[in-house]
Length: 108
Length: 141
Length: 129
Image 1 (cartoon, rainbow over the protein chains, first blue to last red):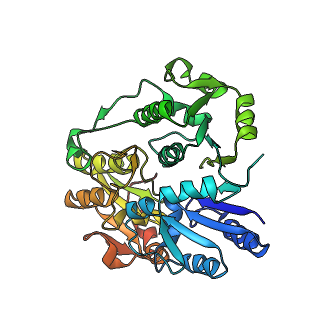
Image 2 (image 1 turned 90 degrees about the horizontal axis):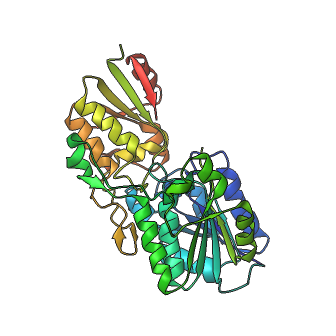
């Protein structure tokens, strides 16, 4: 078992790789790994409550993936409420995850 | 080799400049938090990222017609890099390396901040090998 | 003569060490300081530029604000509207991102994706940033 942090700084609405990134998080979890999907920069746009892609994030959360959205990125974009299963986080938590809470970081 | 717990060094590979990308801002915000945790940070700046450490950047005035919504002037990214490099003097170390090929093709080799090292592709892979965690920020478009 | 220009934003840029996306303030300059009629279409994820209550003050390095002046894209959108620029937002793109009409800056005009075609027909030049 390994611990993965998948950071998504890209806008999931914009990139053709987005379905793969979300599938990857789910697939690693299914294989018994610990997975955090960390949304930052334009990555947080998918986490706004009511967004179409937010349902996919809620699904991943229900499947056991920890889904976090960085607070500064969210506030900058006027996001006040995040989707079910997504928790607001901050740069301290991301640093803690990188230093003590994971084996690999994959940054999209 | 990646360690199971408690990273002591993080390599960050960055290839984008500032002023139309958020990635360098994020790297600086993250580097601060890593240094605060006693983690050594090696930034390897590639392609447009070598312009981040151009020492000739200055605060510039905004157009008069827009000062009401933009302010009178704004700062530049090298100020924040310099602050972090100085922070590294008294704790965990920050190394900032600009790729030699990239500074030469952009004509900014002689414009690099004094505390920045001009490095090679070999340095990139030495950083990667020595790091407990490797973070590569993807280039956009 | 491109006397009437439509400027299209698709990809939002935040916290890039400029007070706002430089393309946005270049467009605002066109609205307020030049004889060209400049109108703006926000589509794809750039619809977020018209969302109220955007706040950049949390971004700091060693306690120093990354963005020294308190501004944001919505403020520039308001400024453009106040100075005679029309700002259009694609309804479907806002909805897909969970953005309700009540979240938007007053004065922006919600249009359908289909209506953007007429907008492009009615301008002399189209710029996509």
